[in-house]
Image (tube, rainbow, N blue to C red; front, side, top):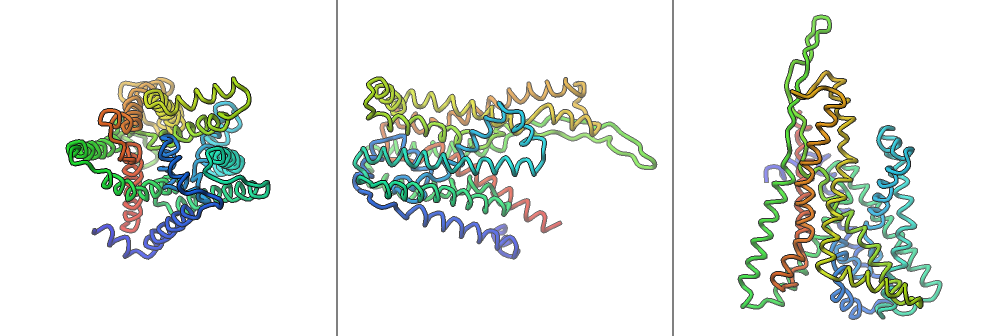
Length: 419
């Protein structure tokens, strides 16, 4: 409460918080403006039967289930960011731009991600509309109506991307993560209402178990998010003129979960493409293509195989994103330039090798934790048979992690005012 009072006592900080709240209100308004020609009853039935698209709808705050103009959420932008990050491993010029050209290079790199968002949003929007049209959820559309619907969907995705960047500019958290958090939190009341309507007194202990598991997940998320491996670093004493520099000991923090919630968001966005394409090609006239599409669709609907694929993707993206954000070679070079060294380790390549070794070991713990949290809802539902709770471990992980990050940003801003 004291921090809340301090926030609203500082005019600049108060204005930033109110601006973010206003952006979130706009986001929720967009999520509830539907596109035309939608059969609401067929739509609800489709998302109730399709587990995968129901999960995706959870992360858009119900925008997809309502077929709103923001139905794709930030999915196309996240997918574009994944593609651009992967391209840095193929094209050295992109890697040079992103890692070594400073802020200007990152601005150009982000601009390419924004431009790539437009065709991806058009492709995903068209795929969803074709799928829902075949399911009888939406009426037959004319060519003009197709063009209008896809244009509105693309404009909604680009607008949400812009809202996320406006939030990021306020330095109180990542805009994309905050919008995803808002979408998840917006689904809490419906999840609670659904669980109350389907309540069975004979499953009292099962429901209590859900509460205990949720609390344990929150504690685990906070513990892993805050956990770090401290690497001691000593700085040699240097004398320049009449001044003495260095001669101090400090440490380099290596976080257990260095990637945050990004791997789970990346994995969900990547899983979206096979499911969409499979549903799109299921009615193909080519027998082989139709069978392959049906196989992929059945694979994604299977709890066991879907969970295994999801788990592996989260681990891979955790290592990939950690490698992008934490480069042992550049860190060892910076330590050496500043006259520092790790006790018992020679500066230069040996330090980089040591940091890489530690990074792989520490990241393994964070990757396994993220993968377990991602598939936890499927494990619990398979064990208990209760599917009323739509909010799972992934949602809790994103909400808690984003909230912790925002608290740190606010604490940093308050500390600046004190100084």
